[in-house]
Picture 1 (tube, rainbow, N blue to C red):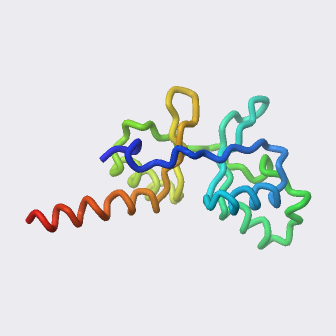
Picture 2: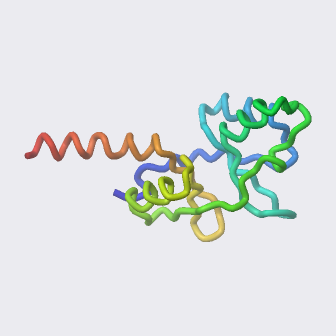
Length: 132
């Protein structure tokens, strides 16, 4: 099974000047755990996750003053739609993260999360068990 089969194509994109509160509201409304941060004048493509927001709050930082750009992970591992889910899971396990931005060329076309992989694998494993 490939990343394209499991990824979410509804990608929340934000800019680096969004506050953490704005980012959290958008992530909550979309029910996603990560946002792609597009910064054409800076790092390019990064990711802001729910963990980044949580860590900021844990440091007593003000979510109305802290920006996504300050908390964005810019050292990102990207997947392609043609990666296998095994490749994606291995990259996540090796890097210690739960989301991969999926690029087609230079454009973000999706995000695949650990949850997406589990959802994709569970029916396939059930089917394999039923056929055995």
